[in-house]
Length: 568
Ligand code: OXT
Ligand code: ADP
Ligand code: MG
Image (cartoon, rainbow, N blue to C red; front, side):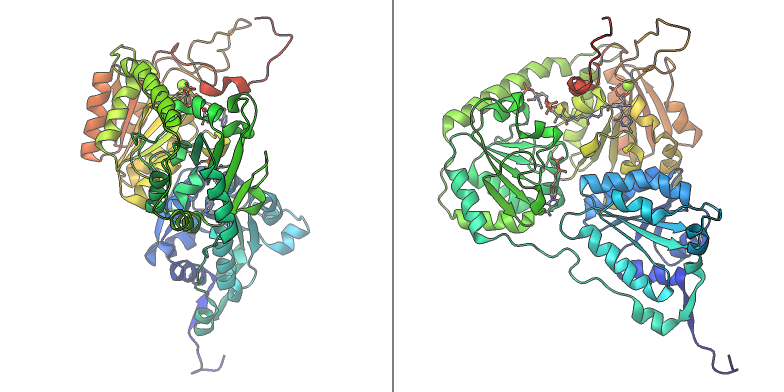
């Protein structure tokens, strides 16, 4: 270049950062390394919050749940091949759960990868990611970074949200271009998740079916929580007078203590309802595919509200499909219902309250038991009261018995406060989700973890301490998976489902400067959790649970295949 004609330059690193900032993405969940270490440093210097994890899967689960909580794509940044693969489970999980997320991964050079010449961490990442996410893109030229991010953001949040893969080869970061042209190449995505209005005919059809019901039921799923149409949904449910059943992560959309909540009468409402309106919930395994024993004998009509047209008739006939975004659909319902809507017959609502009161009364004494070592109910009785006292706190929950019993016992009062294993029932979401929940919401987090579940992401307690996050992890330590009592009759190896007996997970937290407590009774547990909620200090409580207290696979033992040959 001739002297005196130097132009201002930018490069791939800076264009990536500028593209994120322009689109209001202010947090990156990552694990550094070649070729993205400097990208993280520069992003941090440019005011983006860069949260470094110990394993990419946890960073990915953090990004996914950040997307669920904010309706903006959560961004996870990983290194090539192994880092990418570690993040990929979380990307697939986000897609399965309809969480908007972008996995941005550095990759090695196309020329070498495509000839399979053995580059550093060589892998054809784009091809591998494609079947596991909603969309996958690669950017080869600095001037395409803006478009690449725009496509990724739009794909993640529009329609049914999901995971998107964005492949950035190492060479891209160092490519330079004219700074002004670079700025012009960036795209601020306009109306990334456009409203999708339902057709008036579908609204009328749905309300007509609901009106004709003698025993109606509304099932709220995590799509309804994601939609952030909390007031509209509450108005609709209350105006209709129809009992509602919240799916696990929809708990708290309306309080579990709401008079119309049928959570504690689940079997009854599934069996005996005649019309079921699904709002942001799929008829997958969690709802026994809408058929079979748990749905009873009586004929049933389904109404389904979903943004994804292909979801209709996926398992059973949907007599009134309503395709649209939940906010628009529910407000259309509210308008079309007018001021006079007849509540469902009172014999139906009374039958439900009776069942509900029965179940609640059956559970109440179990929650008071003060045994040591604790059983699940004794320990959960304490945690139920903690969430009642701190309804703003976010509950993260995984395990088998620890998951299923906590779901039933702990009432939720506010939307999007319960974050759990989701559609796959996956272990390992715990610490990643807890960290993102604390960072994205600023509220304290209570993570209730089976000892096995915790093990999948346990190293992130260091991350919790490093960022000094208000997270209280309670480990239900029953010495194993489902139970700690299995024995191996064949040789000296431990049984396949048990861990070191009497392990002290609290010491792990102390190793990094957090508070570690060993709690052997409900009273000790109560004191420790209350201290943690008050202080906001990173805390891990090893709650000693009777190893014999759990049951195989919690509440889904029926899904285990049986051997005809095995002698019992
Ligand atoms: O109406 P009825 O009478 O039927 O009563 C119902 C409600 O009405 C009533 N109820 C109430 N009563 C009173 N008061 C209140 N408030 C109340 N609320 C409800 O209670 C009953 C039950 O209600 P519920 O729970 O709503 O209904 P139900 O029938 O259970 O619902 C069905 C389902 C399917 C919707 C529900 O069960 C559900 O959502 N289940 C999710 C299950 C799940 O996802 N489990 C996780 C996977 S298990 C297994 O795969 C595990 N693994 C393997 C593995 C995994 N998962 N991932 C990876 C990456 N690798 C491996 C492993 C390793 S679990 C696991 C570790 C386990 O060990 P841990 O140490 O972590 O945990 P522990 O078991 O504690 O040791
Ligand atoms: P749950 O596990 O709670 O039953 P699912 O994950 O099975 O919930 O279902 C969530 C559903 O919500 C998905 O089918 C998804 O397409 C839908 N969904 C997500 N966001 C919206 C939205 N804003 N409007 C309408 N439907 C949505
Ligand atoms: Mg356990």
